[in-house]
Image (cartoon, rainbow, N blue to C red; front, side, top):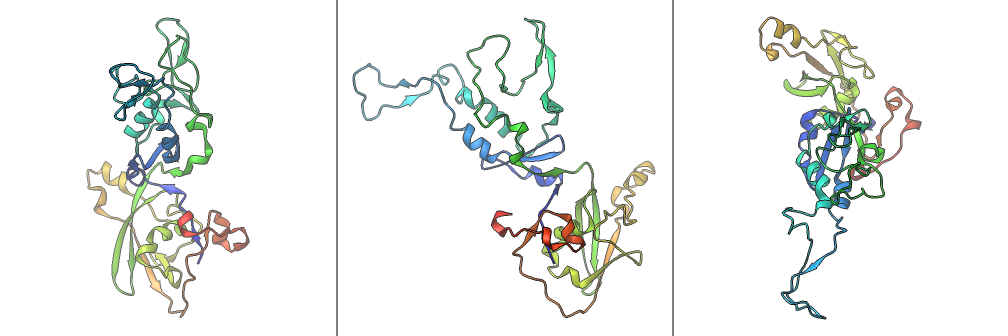
Length: 280
């Protein structure tokens, strides 16, 4: 069995990454890990420091502290960290409404009358049309919303529930999966509940399922919209996938190889690359 890296994420999975040391956001269908970017932003402070000594001397006392003038101006943090604090406030959420495509949404400036990006939630990477002492350029790494190195996956457009029943031991597990995921990717989600899945035959309504197709392509419908039209609960019926044990006396290999290529699923292991579990 080849263990694949997760490619699709539900909004609930993104929402749990909502701290300064673990910050994810979703933007235009992509999930971005901004934790390294935040670490760099929190180090920014180009302000001229002021001394806390009551009298200016050639030397400072041991208890002297250098502080940023932004605190005297009423900021709770250095103004250079304004965008980072805004991103942290929206950690785990979707920020697609900030942008139109790859650019920020625009508005007509009330002073100059030109159409400029609307930086409501912090400064951008371009100098404003009206000079401002609060503007500071971003880091040399470039805009975070165009950096492909922080993309960890895609956010699903629609989630759906699915029930998986092991007919050998009679246990059922209900999962929230992405509608774009193939059956093999759903098997990766079910892996903590059954680590020997390839020794089972997956069936729905007595029909075998194909691993490289989605649930919809395998003939497993999502009937929640029909239930809503009939004023019935969405969870009135959840499709149930049945697992039948093959008794093939095999064992799964150790989890030492993760692969991002779906071709591995169809029997092309030469496209697979070894990645340690802690790096995946």
